Length: 263
Image 1 (cartoon, helix red, strand yellow):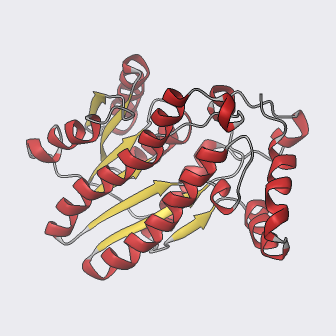
Image 2: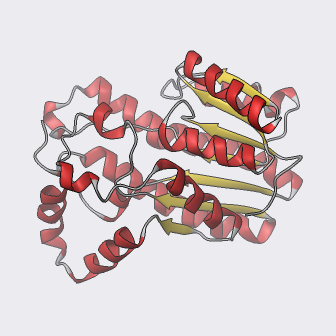
C-alpha cells in the first residue's frame, strides 16, 4: 500500500477491534494519527505503542461520539485548531442483539446517534475541509448487515444500509473533486462486537471469522484504490452475491438463522 508520511489520519472507535487495527496499519504506513474513543486508558496505551514502534505523532482525544455535541468538538480540536485531517476512518459504532421492542429506547437512540448521525456529521465537517483542499479520504465502516433486514439487529442493520448507500452517493459527489469515499462491509470479525451486543456465536462460526487486522487492511486498500464499496472476505462476497437469488420476503428468515436467536 501507499506510504502516508506527512499525512494525518483520524480513527474513531480506535480503542479496540477494527479501529485499533486501522490505527496500527496507518502508523506502519507513516501517517500521524488522531485516535478517539471513550476509553482514555486504552487509547493512551495504543498511542504509546505506535509512537515507540513507528515514530509517528499520535494525538489522543477521548470522546463519546454518541453524544450529539461530540462531532463538533472533535472537529474543533483538530481542523478547528489547525490540524488538517487527510484521512477520516469512521469506525465507531455498536449493535445490540435484541428484539426491537425489548430494547430500551434510550439505548436505541444512542445507537442511531453514533452509527448514523455522528458519522454523517463527521463526513460533512471533515469532508468540507478536505474539499476546500482538493484532496482527502473518508472510509465509513458499514457491515454485511447492510445487505439484509436482520431480526434482532433491526436498527443496526438498517443503519449500516444507510452508511453503505450514503457512502457510495458521497463517493460519486466528491470523487471528481479529489476526495475519495468508500464503505467497508465486514462480516464476522474477531472483535469485542458480539460480546458488547450480547450475541452468542457458535464455535464453528468463529472458525470463519476474519482478524481485525486483515479486515482493516482490506478497507484501506479499497479506499486508496478508488473503490466505493468493499465486502471483506471471499466467503462474505459470495454470500452477498447469492442473496440476489433469495426472494425478498425470505431475507429476514435467512438473516435470523445466520445470526441466531436474540436475547
